[in-house]
Amino acid sequence: MAGDETAGQETGVEIVDAALEGKAAELVAKLVEDGAASKLAAQDATLWGPDAESEASIRLSWTTLHKSSRPLIGEIEALRTELQAEGVDRVVLAGMGGSSLAPEVITGTDQVPLTVLDTTDAGQVSDALAGDLDRTVIVVSSKSGGTVETDSHRRIFAKAFSDNGIDAASRIVVVTDPGSPLAELAGKEGYRKVFLADPNVGGRYSALTAFGLVPAGLAGADVARLLDQAALAAGSLGTDSPENPAVRLAAALGAAHADGAEKVVLADTGSGIAGFADWAEQLIAESTGKQGTGLLPVAVEGPDAPGFTDARADATPVAIGPADGNAKIATTGSLGAQMLLWEFATALVGRLLGINPFDQPDVEAAKKAARSLLDNPAALEGGAEPSSVDGAVAVHPSDGVTGTGSLGEIVKAFLGSAPETGYIAVQAYLDRLDDASAALLRTEIAKRTGRQTTFGWGPRFLHSTGQYHKGGHQNGIFLQVTGAVEADLAVPDRPYTLGQLQHAQALGDGQVLAEHGRPVLRLHFTDRAAGLAQLISAIQEAVK
Image (cartoon, rainbow, N blue to C red):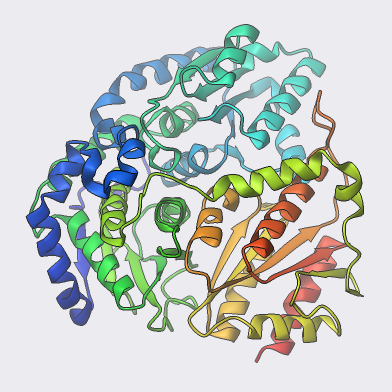
């Protein structure tokens, strides 16, 4: 198994910065005195105050998943053996947010193949369909059972199976909560297997539930070992000790936030874990970004990346792995241990910030706006005319955002409007495989502006940082990037295509951000490759 170098690592948190450690000491003492860690381990729903108690009381089963998820191991292995005997060894996962991020990290760390569909991009879904369907099983994961992206993937794959003479029901595996619409549909349709997850675990805390374990285990990851890793860490994380890594991490992040560092810059420094920051991003942003406060996670390319090496007072660089470079905090441990560490620490940070870490009050707004646009095809297809067009880029600014002049002038004015201690969010509604170079936008913007810059693939970020964008600190500006769809895909028995759904999600989120007073600049590429090259060139020329 890959990532074995982390197997013997003790779960630890090093507060590298002496000044930060001094400020954190008071919060460490407070958490220990309050018995916060042991109460959390005991699933005490009163930790976050009376307003949060109702929600918290049905969201704390994640603290014991290293025990309660054990029966899944045999079920997963039995199904994998059955499928392989039938020549089915290619696993596709249809899921969003908490249903996709953990399996991707688990399989990436174990270096086993998993095709993840957390997109509405027609090109990316078409590429997944082009794989060998005779060898394919699709895992459809949705806690609510009504996730529109995941339902679209299910419909598209079911039709593709049938069109190729394959019994679709035998190739669809479902992970959902008991009693969900998806669970009912699976029973009606006779899908191959239904895994019912623990309903008392929220999506972003679900890594060690069926949502994380089933797709990863079917793909060949060692999920039993993952649970073993979490079990080894669980004892220390639930103790009221100043040496408890979760207490130390929560106190350090809380102290930094109190000192103005509302952003957490995450860089891998040799952890042996693949893509951990992408998983932690949802956990931190959706748990803390509300009521005008919170911690904004900024996932960067490495410890030498802009935003980490030159972090200002508004951000705390955190190494995932040994302390390196400018890191003020470093966390070490195996994947299972780090997942549990960050879950405990994030819940404890919620107590320090005075917020409920288990709700997501602003996530639904963008979904509603997208649904409204889908119900009004004329508004969706028409939309506002661009304020200007420069080459392959059409410009669509929100009210108060400059939208005329050359692309370079528009970009320069927009990026220059970010507050000194604010942030720039790049939101790319593109194909994260074929258009992967769009991620260069984060590096270029961060390097040239000196502002903390996040990058998210749409619509998957709507299920993670989307909560922080509406509910967190109100100092962000939002660069949306959309692109022409060359070959669209119909969604069977639905009045829209994937291209229309993707467009509605971009416009809907932009609309909600603008309604919250957030500046939005949408740049639409009439030719994706040419538009992206043009935008990067404009940033390089305009912002020096």
